[in-house]
Image (cartoon, rainbow, N blue to C red; front, side, top):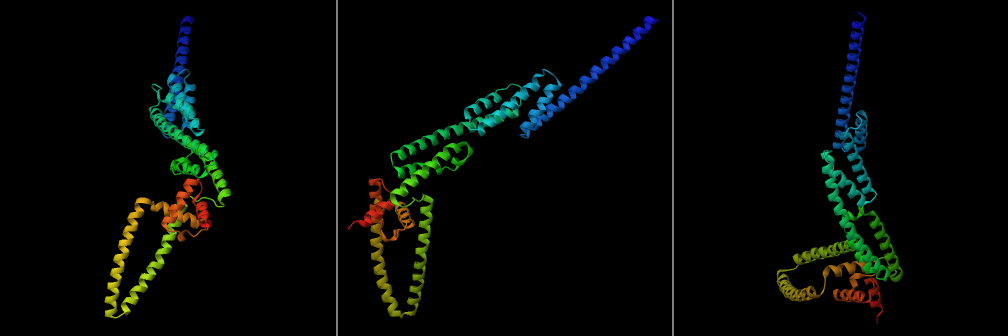
Length: 315
């Protein structure tokens, strides 16, 4: 009787222990599944720190689980790649995103995003090489005291709207410093700070608008005078005006033809605006004189302002 009782007790204990173990395993599996799902959702939402925490908890819920370890490592490497980009360690970023992309049975979302990051890095690295090459060229010109030419090379850099992005900030700051040095040197030589192309265009535009206003006023006055004159006077004036207009048109056409073959109108206007902006009256020079000043400045490696002053000082 006692033996039978011990058998029953043993069976009951075994069933209880087994049930507890099974229940505990079920709870662990539910917790594991919940953490893995939370981690994947966080990855999709680009909340990578939250994803890392969830995968860490999943890996601790079921020890030595390869899936949780794989997702955790992949997420951590992706985060490291992002931090490398922010620090402009682009080679390290390439290595990190390549590792993430090549993980088998990992997060497909992270794989796709890593490929996108690798494409971006290719563009950044290529652009940095071009920017560095231009900066070095401008630096060499600066060291050779070719300050205007150095600024011309730097202008190519600053015209690129992407140049001010974080990826290129180290080169951008050096380029701004070099331009400041060039301008300071030119100011000490010429007494004036060079203006940029944008400033020249603004001055030119304002000058054109100012010159158009008197012209419109003059046209209005001429119309009123014509209306007040008699019929005979109108006919005579019209005949004379047509003759003069025809002659002026022929002369203007000839001058325009000659100018278009030898002069860059936009360069003349920009130079005239630059002279006006530095205190000289750019309108007092003819197109031919402006062209001569530009040629003199290029030949002597000086600014157009300095060349204009030298030209004025000549007897």
